[in-house]
Image (tube, rainbow, N blue to C red):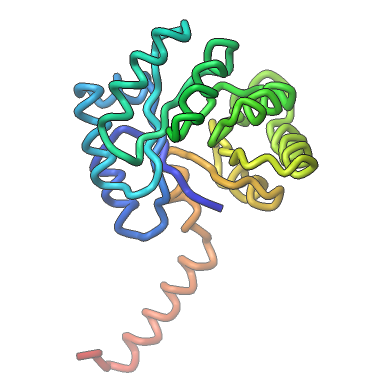
Length: 217
């Protein structure tokens, strides 16, 4: 499964990229606002740090407006994926852009029916929001399983990009189901490293090593 970071903070992106774990980045207007920086400047800098797809979201709601904004965004770098909402105009824009060779991330997906439409429109990525789905009493992982089944039934190439990830088990469950990608805040990705037995094991090994009185190098 590919790992994308859901952030607009360059320092966090560089840190994760250094681990070799980072396959891409997703951004949105809220994340850009939190960074306090110019939108186009941030997207350009991120695209220079990460080799994989960098999702940059349009804010227009009509097809023509989305296409105008997409034209600006996709000129930033070759690895830009245009993020559009799962609406009729969004999918119309998706079809036009993917037909022209541009990656498209269709976002704000909350049903398998919506995911089916996005795949038929040629989406590169579909972003089901599992955390927000859980918040309103639905099972976010059941949604991922339904989408995986439908896509496999028809060999759709659209990649399932699990979004709104709230904790490490969302990542594990998505991987077990067979999601192609997950995007999470850097904090969640760092939590994947953590296990109390790893910490206690290191502490024990270091205590035993100290008793030997030896040094390496």
